[in-house]
Length: 471
Image 1 (cartoon, rainbow, N blue to C red):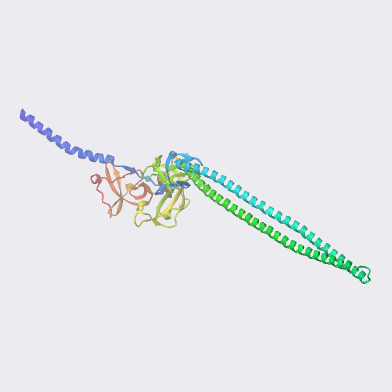
Image 2: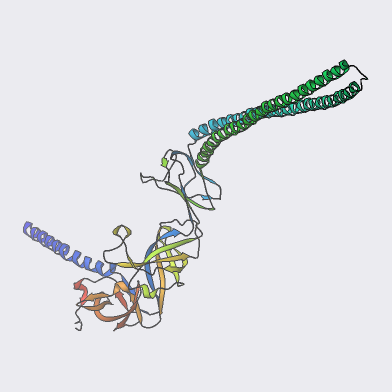
């Protein structure tokens, strides 16, 4: 009894092991057959599309940079906000510049007062010099008037003495005639001669007085003219000195005003505002994060960029073998991967005339030259951001003949192209000739018909139907 039970147990174990070995292999093969992706052969009716990879860029951008030597961000708008022209984007710490501006404002006010004082003092000195000159000129005129009167008097005295001399000489002549006639005594003649001598002396004295008066008048006028010249020199000196003082004060004031303008500009530069309507994108800090409150920025450093999201374009590269297929004005579809493969209409805006080799950090390959192309987006999406990766699809041809299958269903074997036709749970290797193709679909010719199914992955050799492929 025990022997029969042991035999039965051994049989059960053997059967279990055999099933364990055989069952998984069949299961794996069956599951491999079921999981193999397939596609149905369809009549060709598709568009050949050239797919290019690229990045978005804004057509209208306004970079905002730091105009201060350095500064700390004390306030910043939220990244990705929409701004209007004049809206505040970033405010830098301006306490130092405001204090400097306030100090300079006081200095400018004091400088303006100083200029007014200097002008008043200069004007007073000039007016005083002018008064002195006027007095000197009046003194000259007075002396000239007095001298003219004195000279006129002296001339009159000479004329009078000349007349007296003439009279006395006439009387002398008369007395001499009378004396000759013995009508008068000789003493009368002598007396007349004495009168003539007196008249001659008086005339000579009057003439000497006139000469002295002329000399005195000339000396007095010369002194007064010297006073005038001195007053004129004093006036010129006062005007020159006054103008120099005023100019220096104005120069000092101008320097302070320039410093004030610089300080006020620094205060204004601490507030960075949007120059136009657009989307605000804060710049990246060297730490790899967006700029934020507390970060320090330096002159010339980009702080943000205001872009117009309604005017975006995609920049992509076209290979040398594809350039003949693309023309300016062709319609395109721009697929934005980051936005759930959002599809937007576009048009080829420009194609460069010169092929260039991209550097490796630009995604280029050694020895491969490409042409740069710009695709203008005809649709707007406020979610778009510069730098987003896109796929540009440009329709280059429409195919309406033959049979179409996915390009991944075509395989190369021994230099020939084949497809794996589904035959129930197995696959038949069928040679085909590939015609026109796009990035996704290929037109094929061969022993296929619409409705057939082909594998999109190479089947396991064990699942193939043995059919010789023509060489």
